[in-house]
Image (cartoon, rainbow, N blue to C red):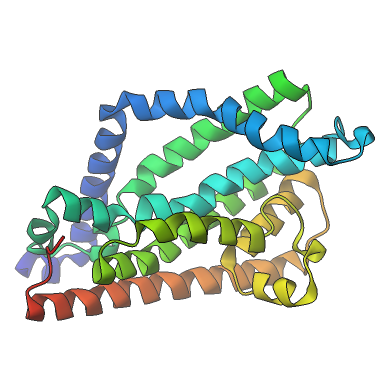
Length: 275
């Protein structure tokens, strides 16, 4: 505690390093996860993209713009899912393994402690972009648009941070209510639909369009397509960045505060490690 008070930045960096090591070692320990991702990706592409294409006019089957929507949609799917499956369920896994109480005995920053999968997720996202690109080239023979690489990378990093904030808020719910796993799939596809991951939110009916503008992933999707494909943004890109970053900061702050509040209550009631 004394070292934390005298050199808080050094302690924070040590916690980040420890969290990164745990996250990356866990990722590489189970090689089957990586192999499964690589094997199932073309299956998901065929299962999802081909039926959708069959409902489109034949002249759009090989349309580069349409296929680029699918490509970046798959990448965005990974980003949105990160909030639920990577960050939000870390607490659940610690509960299942019986290690949550031991972690809570430390004075580590809770946000860093429960977002250790961020580092493995960044690596996984980089690999996803590479092999989804390879599969799109092999399956559809289309050139993936990557017009502004810096803007694309910035949009994806902002999306991961937004997912982390969303995951912390969701993690607080996991912390409180324990088994909320079935909610994951429902929330995932609701978020994918409302955020316009595979299409522009302007295609949604009026009320749903308004709801879409309340989600951070809507701005991530729009900015990513703006920089990657050159599409016109919903609003001024600078304004979208301001909204996205403010929303992300709010989610991160809310997530940390909620986890702290739930932890304090569970310590008093003895339900901290209850599974």
